[in-house]
Amino acid sequence: MADIFSEDKRSEIMSNIGSKDTKPELFIRSLTHRMGYRFRLHRKDLPGTPDLVFPKYNSVIFVHGCYWHGHEDCKKASIPDTNTEFWKNKIQKNIDRDHRNYKELEELGWEYLIIWQCEIREENIPELKKKIDSFLQE
Image (cartoon, rainbow, N blue to C red; front, side):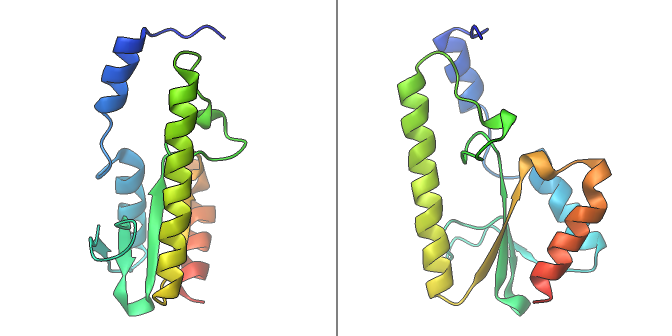
């Protein structure tokens, strides 16, 4: 498939993507709050600065974008046709960093859950609730 953006345009698009308060994250925050859970946001003293932190449960939730975190076998995680090596390396570094953060969290006694961007859809709310509930009630 031909890439529809020039390298400069793609660079501009990618640099404008924020790491906090994304639509998927806001969706999960709202859903989790409506479920009755209370949490802190983006605690910098924890590895990976988790999106939602549940101190009462010693648990955190990461809301990961499929592209940026290299979600395997997900169509949203396809590498662009231009500057392919750069993007492969960038995504792989993100994956490696994520795994280090997960390991550090476990060593500190924290549990973590990853919710992928592609899972976050209105029609998937019952499954998301079940996933969050079973994670926090373990």
